[in-house]
Image (cartoon, rainbow, N blue to C red; front, side, top):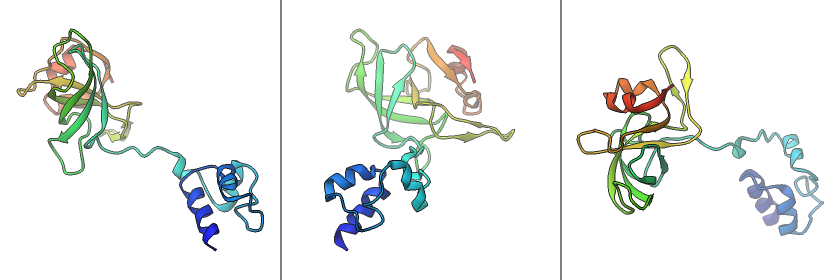
Length: 176
């Protein structure tokens, strides 16, 4: 019974049954050990829920791409300034620069403010449509909310207009 519980745990956390069989010794006396291919997981009522990536808020330790020319490449979120769960599109965060270009305006290890301009979490619009992006991205700003860089790369949602980030919208090359 103990070995059966380990197999169920491995299947529920999304590992292939072939891996569990090699770890547990090719058990064929029960239902889970006799599965041949990963496609056979659907025969148990498994619908691939654990294979999908969970899209959540921008929270502490989230790594974000910097999409302006301030000199930073990647930042890690320290704190979301609004909301208990985390930050969404247009919210301001405090972040630490993880990777930077050699002669940029910001250096590695610096603590900066940033506005979330792209988020992988879906955000509903008032017309019933949803907007979501492939990555999480941020534009670095100073304490007054003015952008540090002079250009913004990639698409930026027009929801930033409601959050009073008009300067970022004017610098953006494409508004989604």
